[in-house]
Image 1: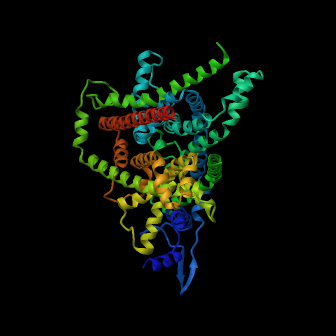
Image 2: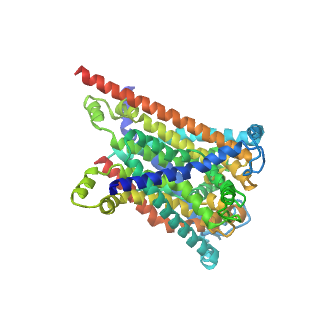
Length: 305
Length: 281
């Protein structure tokens, strides 16, 4: 029996292959193939059917034929709504990434310079908000920013302003919401990078006569490049496709592509156009995603070495 | 004052401002959950009535139950798959297709949720079309989608722990004749247990929190808590949501406090053990 089992084992893939295959197949089946299907459907036409699009492969007189439509992509180029939504999403993502960096870098720097016991508490305080619901944290800003909200009430009470400021339903509210929600994603990779900085390098710079600010600009900042890249990509790429924040805090004229995709899918029920929107978004993001992947792989290799 | 002190003082001030920015909105949520008035921002006296209203809301309670179950099973599966993927990334020698493998693991970390959600749904619809499965979308389809996007985060957490682990213990066990499977279960797994726990918690909270991917992949009878919150917030602000938010913040703070306390205790015990070991030598 055991001999039979052993000889059977020879023909079965080893446990090594099983450990590779299970997550590999899962990710191929549920991450890569769905993107390929979205790519496929972006070339079909919307139809009143279930599923609501025309098949790509049709049979004409017993011969298979491809029924490919470029119409959806032409539509995206021709209708200025889509072009300006893409541009405005990228603009919002870039500006809010920069704002996150501006606020997050000093925070990460301060935490990295703390003694280890306080450092853990400070880190936990940075992460803690992202453990509570994302939706609810955005919801909190509605109460703060709206015309009769907390901020306006406070400013009017102190006499700084006489009339409420219109912040809610403007791009400013969207920026505040994005920075608020994504700040921890900037701080964490920056912290992980800054905490590894060899303090002796700064001492050497100081011994050689560099002022602290100069040492910061010439030593700390260049050495933290990997952290800056990782943090920025972690913020920028998801923000381009953000739906919840512009939907809840933005006005009807706050154009973001994630919102357009949502409307095409849920309101217009035009699945092919929604697919085309997502494929173009993916093409725009492919370079940032590759930069992020390379930074991530480098980090891994550095740890393994 | 030296420039160095000024630099670190500037960063400390920024840290304090950053924390105020992160916590004041949450504090305002809690304060106004005890407000008598239906208007969220006008104070009209202390009241706990919104909490009672919240617990009377059957739809909200049902949605919360679905969300908690989904998050629990998502986290369990994501930890198993994530541990396997992390072992592949950090312990396995190179194989054909490893580049694609690592790309498939890191891409979901940054992939916009609308793209993941839409493509997942299209997969389920196509599978229904081709094989007749998943025609009715339900908690099961949401579970698959959630496992897929949370697994990447779990993999990153576990592989970073595996990466900094001292390999000599594993090698010693191997030299003593243990096979790889035994080494993994007897040596590696106990050492990375804290990382498994934080990965599990990460997947749990990500799943509990997700609105976009759930909205695409849910079925008619599977409304999650974020979907319910989103639809009621669209109607306007409601103190009931404030009450719910306060409860969530309370639960998370309690969990964090326990985690911090147990971490500190195990750290202290480790230091004491090390001291004892030094004294005995």
